[in-house]
Length: 174
Image 1: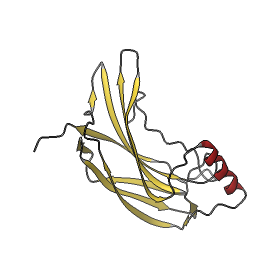
Image 2: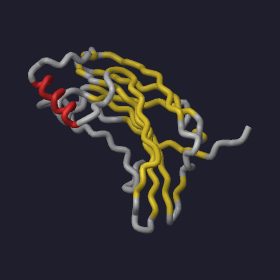
Image 3: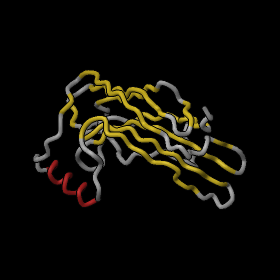
Image 4: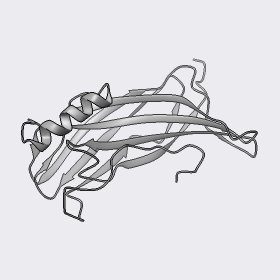
């Protein structure tokens, strides 16, 4: 689904300390996978928790990239994020480091999701000037929508992010 040209990455790695199994599953259910420039993508993020899990935030991110084969230059077209629950993303690495220390010392106060299923509706507006999805020998424009859980601590996550490729097309005149 994802090509080397435009990857939709989320900075998090494995699971809770010392446990190889993931504690939760994230599903991304979209109303539709296509949208016009200036349109809206909507759906539901479903978080299914198997064991008590501390989650700093649950988010949905739209990311789009453009790549040309001449020189292999990759350019980010759009990056938008919606916080479904929890806190906003860190503004700096220092803020993230301080949060990691608070978590290690047992001083973080994030919600603990108990086993069960949680559903969060979302909507992301697309920019009016969004180029359409394209793939040919010289040029590539791709968009990805990803739902992920941001967990406290350094380089841990409770669940693998869920991602879908989105098809953008030109807006139609009314």
